[in-house]
Length: 132
Image (cartoon, rainbow, N blue to C red; front, side):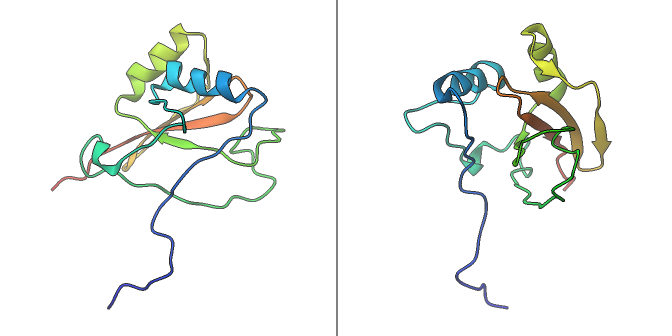
């Protein structure tokens, strides 16, 4: 079947509303290692770690979901792929970042959650490489 034209092929950007955009950008750089430029952060699919895990999921949730946090005004939650969930969580705890104690493990990866300084719940995902 021929590939159709005029369709979404992936996520092109993530944009957050912030009271202090520079401070929030600096926080993500300091604690999650996002590289920062004048325009924010750019991820290239060549950076997938481990190889074969470079994917992005899009999903809609019910407006009354607690998945983004209970009582939250948050309309969007970002999921970041990470290379070593345990090491990152330890680094975040040491830096006094709010780390949710809840964890979830699945055949496709491990999940944890943190809260950024603007109160946004953020999901961290360490994908598991598929066996060849």
